[in-house]
Length: 266
Image: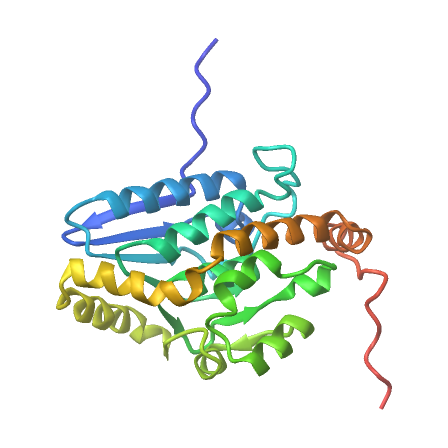
């Protein structure tokens, strides 16, 4: 029979001069971390990092959402114990965190859960003022465990407690105040602001940048691999728990989970 056509690419890699731009382009599911998107993102990151002329990597997106987090309609990843492709997400976060080349997140829309973890993993994050962020895991009955490995080193402790526990959304300016992003600008200034960071990074010696990234990682690196494995296990356990199963079912069924209480009467 005729050969099956390959599924359309969900992540694009564009190398222009010394900048590699990686674009999440899966607007149909709000750039959710489906297995296909994760595989392509991982491969493009590897290529960008291995390309000699590339000095800066920019992670950006098409459509109104940067990344909505893991794809809840795909319960299993590549391995039997790989709930929602969490193992691949760990690999991607580690690849960004460990990249010898600086990675800039360009955020012109909303980011949720695993999507915020991607932003946090990057060295520099620039967002529009109206971009929104949230750790909505608790609202679907799961623990933001794996994502905490890149997010917690960025956040003020008070903010971590507030936003991890409530799942409430917050905007660009607040994201700067709590340490999640470096800079927010109006949408029409976003590309100029990203360019400003790119140009600043291009004045730095590549070898010195790679060594400085190692130095910056060092404080978090001790035991990071063990911590990642523990957090992966905790994430997977929470998704398979009673609350996790109810939360995912409620999310997919577009209904409130059993624990969602109405606002306190005034």
